[in-house]
Length: 329
Image 1: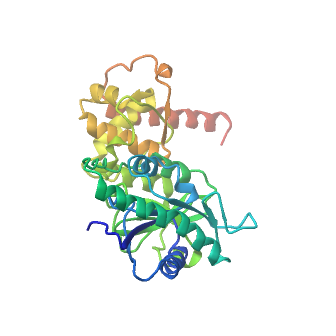
Image 2 (image 1 turned 60 degrees about the vertical axis):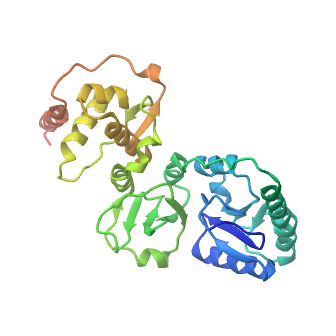
């Protein structure tokens, strides 16, 4: 649907359902009734106005979209820290002065909207085709910060579940039998204990769940490049399916030495795009980290990589057995 002079296309990103509902009602109250309001995705080519949680503004996917499609942006902070409701294009919730918000919308949204329509009618230059939105590593980095508390993971299809970032636990939605593929629409929003009670009773390790989520989401293959050097921090726990052999083989190689996806593919003879998705899943889940390539030193001798993990485990068990015997435990 194309944008028209009497229509505003507005997107809200990263807010709870309650705050999103309040802001939608305020926008409808402030914007004159002769203007239709259409709530759209952030990647909509006809976007007129973006309302976004301040924590999401610097996300790579958001900055990429704004670089080729600049629109007025109203940042949202959920807890008041200034006397005014709006300061430096930032709205502090809760809204206690609708007049300030109304003035901001009138001075930013209507002027920009008018200028946009004038440009469309007077310019004959071809419209630049937006680049496809890409998944963003920044979202996962925030999940591992342990400061967000309870958050829900959502995408265009709905809620995936609720995470406790402090305890690194995840409760999936009861409507999900397993982690389904996601794309660039994956996002997080603050959650409540009430929403947590609506999730499945069985919790999961957050890192392992995120690894499984990204591993089964082909859209995330390019989260890391094939030349990013990756160092293993923790082992993924694949399900007993056809992926298990590849995952253990790749993990065993990384356990021995930090490598790039390109190097892993060459050593294991596994398709580089599959290996790149594997390394992307590891870093997104916090089971690995990227390091400078110069720290990647001696090559790993070619061997049966799937056996390395088993042998290493036996060595550790043997060492612990000797310690127990030595100390009479």
